[in-house]
Amino acid sequence: MDRYLLLKDHVYHYISDCINSGELNPGDKINEQKVSDTLNISRTPVREALTQLASDGYLDNLPRRGFRVKSLDAGKVRQLYEIIGTLDGRAATLCMPYLTQGDMEEMSQLAESMDQAIQTGHGDRYYELQVSFHDVYLNRCPNTEMTALLRKLKNNFIRKYYLFEDPDNEFEVLEDANRQHYEIIRLFQAGDKEELERFIRDTHWDSGKARFDAFPVKDQ
Image 1 (cartoon, rainbow, N blue to C red):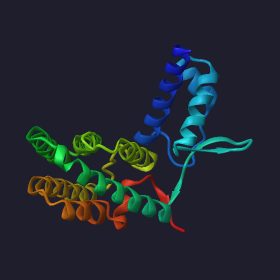
Image 2 (cartoon, helix red, strand yellow):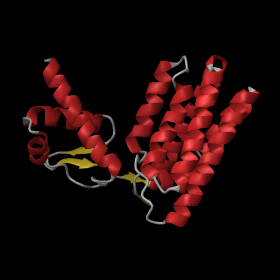
Image 3 (cartoon, one colour):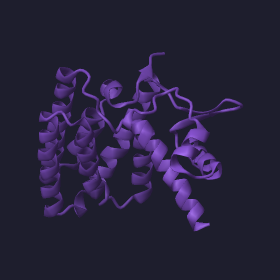
């Protein structure tokens, strides 16, 4: 049983990594046999992993057509941004009393590392660092149900690989995003809960910017 669960988890992470890296794109059909052959495992854990991925929002399970990578319309992406912004802002205020000086220093170091990733065009590295940045304070949040939901919502549609196909535009967008990280640090240090919550909700997760961070979406 334990080995079976490990296989299922292995398949889950393999497919989600393919989606997040752009190897699998919205609308692509998942070839169960190919996954089974690639990982050298039976199709049973593959099927279970696909079902879980559909439940978690990564895939659509279409009757008689199999599993496909989920596409999101622009309206839904904006709605998700509003939800995530609300949860992230609230979680930040809840964790404020528990943050240490070490946490502040770690966030500052991560922001500096993100600057370096932007300058060198390493979008994938930038994503990893910004996840770690937000995890510093989310890990201190006493409401673990809130942070679990928040992480699930982010994982459902946030791209984990920034492709520098338009370097000038993406350079500016990422620079702006990282300036916001520095502002988040400043607000934590100032202990300004109200402004911190507002800034994360209305600026850092501004739904007007949703199209950059999300999987390619279609307008309604």
